[in-house]
Image (cartoon, rainbow over all chains, first blue to last red; front, side, top):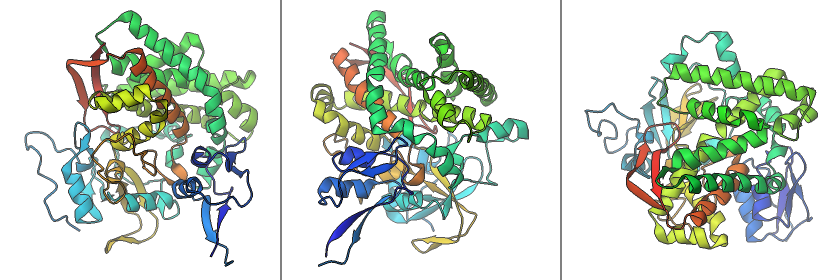
Length: 67
Length: 409
């Protein structure tokens, strides 16, 4: 089972907590909306914290079904 | 549902009863609130203005309601208001709604909020930080010249956020003293509400004039940005209303955190020393102070849009739920030893700024002001101490805070 990071910019409210938690992976565009700097980043604790604290639910972890 | 213990009517009968969610002993929320959290998931309460509502106190419940803007609406309607507001005309009422992000649901909320989010990015905050540092240093210098004893609430806590907002909104330097005096009067609960409404109208008119002038020559501030980038999408009342909303939302909350946070640290000298001397301790320390102090103590209200249920209690559509952020932030199910201040814990996941689509838009700014303002004060005055009888708590107000904090150094 592999987990994958899902990012939904339409849901994002630009709180920026993910950028503070893991700046190597998350960034914001000029409207404050989340962008991802790294495709399929390894899911470290900082990313998990970003997902857990994301206020809008724009970040989530999804099991991609692969072994 | 009733809690196991009687939770109302336990206070001194001689004073008018303060709702359980506003009762504190200095920093500590009423033990009655903790008993409610343990006893049952919802408690039926009556607000001071006579509305019946359901109080939620558990971290996971509060977070779940905040996360669900479809079933729990911010556009609260047909609920009793303070009697002073009853005789306002519609003309007086309408401006109170413009630009108030906390009174809107998506998609209207999303449209207005998105015009502002670009101003509060991590990058923008980094660019703004030197200006905040300058404001803080100038204020500390003025305090040093004035000499002790002085009241930190008026000389520092209230002034720094107000000056930062002036900077952000592009209030000209020549207007700042008058502007500060007005905003401080507007949020002073000891000023009669009629007078505060009048001051509020004057400030809205001022913002409206400021926005009008900015349309001719938009500056490098939030109002200028809104005009350049969203001038066609925003009506003039919305623009003035947004500026006014930022002023109100960003002022007293941060002000109270600065003053209360200083007092909390003065009462915990070892933790104060870490905040003063170890730059790495500051950011997690600020998060813990946000959690532990939870200055937004008046419950956050949501109107239930469809029938729902908490712990077997049915809450019908149309009813109000009230969310206690201080109770949720001290839920032992979410944080160990919740009543202890421990700046080392980091307090990830606290709800002091709310959660969901209404998560405080100014949180990055508030965090930055606290990360700069608290250590700078402690470093400038290493011998900071409280004067005898220098502390006054301001109970039962929307935002918890101090009436005074007289200090020497």
